[in-house]
Image (cartoon, rainbow, N blue to C red; front, side, top):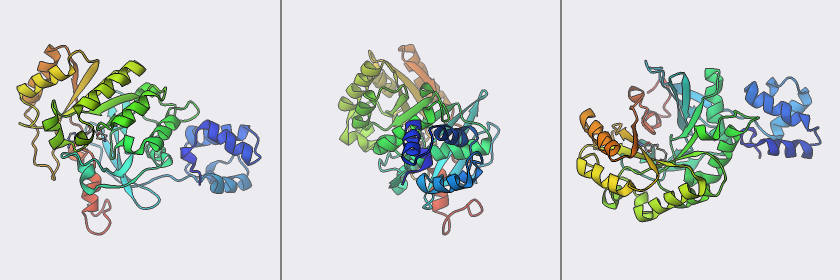
Length: 351
Ligand code: SAH
């Protein structure tokens, strides 16, 4: 079965041809889907009723259902829990800032990577999302908000490189001109360090941005925080990142979540500087967002600033992410975890 949101313009052209439809139908369909943001084929009234019914069979149009959304706080961040056709739920976050909007999307239901501080991995990986479901996250929110986001970050639940094909297909749909037309450089993939995924992306010829979750200046600390490091330690990860930059000309952003006492001391900053010196790299610091299942603490603001300052003084391009929407349980996987642990199947009312 071919899900509508998983199809690229060339797929629609091929599908129309196979179905004996004139080529302009593909254009009408794409306009209906992505310009008019129809919620069902029955709404595409430029087509005959018969053709609309055929499309229901040829390429079903399924939108994830909104289960709940957190109230928009003063910063306008809204976190949604969406339900897929089989009842599985993922989170996606709408993040306005300075007149622009970033949507953070999920790539899997849960996650198999088990990073110590991340709520998404607590329940393991239930399944990967399809390309259509990933595009559906953006379509569901765009319909609710009446506009597309300017930026997409694949930083919700899941490890995108453990669902490589579906994620890449979805990002191509979101990027395509006849679709949502979100610029490639406004689309960021984030990986916990799945080296084969980094190597594959380097060969794709796409301009998407890549972030790598580093979180530690050495293998000992990284092993503790991120089991993936035992499979692909720093000696494999960093050369793969260098090769990615050499092949694509794109600079990687290293995400570094600061955990009090564990990786936020001046000695850790010095070690990180040594690790990244001479590399083309940017660093994004993220103060830990507390999760119940991890006993690490958020560093003080002063310690975060000192860490930032040390990196900047060493000439490393560094930013610090404000922890936004914390009151909205906006750290990865927290909303789903909260509703899953509720009585029966959690809903907005129950949680
Ligand atoms: N699996 C991908 C993308 C999802 S997580 C990856 O690991 O990169 C997106 C980012 O949020 C990652 O950098 C992740 O390590 C970070 N993150 C997860 N839980 C966090 C928490 N409790 N506090 C701060 N950052 C967290």
